[in-house]
Image (cartoon, rainbow, N blue to C red; front, side, top):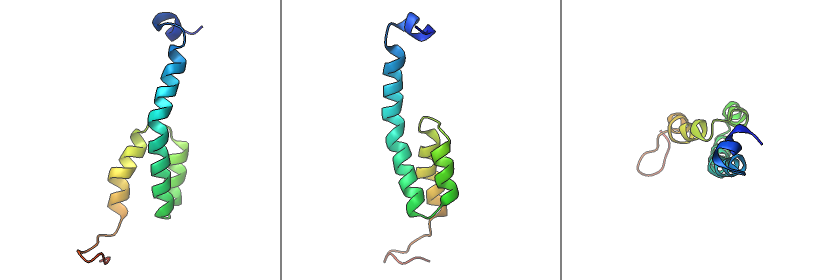
Length: 79
């Protein structure tokens, strides 16, 4: 029995693992999919290797991937 289980009760570590995994897995999957679609192999490898409970993935999705995408005009043509 580890320290968290002895303090919070049996199974606490397992429950936390399941909750953290359920939170981070969809973010990681979407970020990896987005990096692959944009042909960004360095981002793909970094997102695959670095585990930050979804923080790095969320930053990539909303900040870094948008900064590298070409701007489109109102007709959908790239500039």
